[in-house]
Image 1 (tube, rainbow, N blue to C red):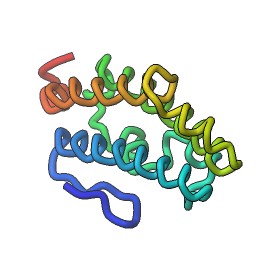
Image 2 (image 1 turned 180 degrees about the horizontal axis):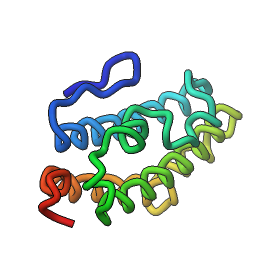
Image 3 (image 1 turned 135 degrees about the horizontal axis):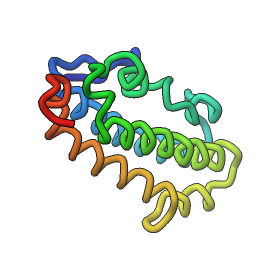
Length: 140
């Protein structure tokens, strides 16, 4: 599994897709830290706010098997993924608009960004254990 330069995730199975999403999730944190340091980012704030523009978001829309889409895990991850993108966009807005101190604070523990990030990470790890069975219709 791999996240290539084109922003697409190459993975073999559903659980590998979630592993790749976890890696992409971490790369967002690095991207935001870089934006804070430089004041620039190759992704606009508006695009960062959209949850269907990243490779994982596109997979959630088009790649998740229909049976797995009926699961609570899917609904939860989709909601948390959207919340993460909203918070990431908020941090990015601060970073690219010269509010470096505020952006740094927005990424620290006990902030909405940190909470969204942590919740999404845990939800992805939980879903990883069940997605293959859900895709086969063996688990709700």
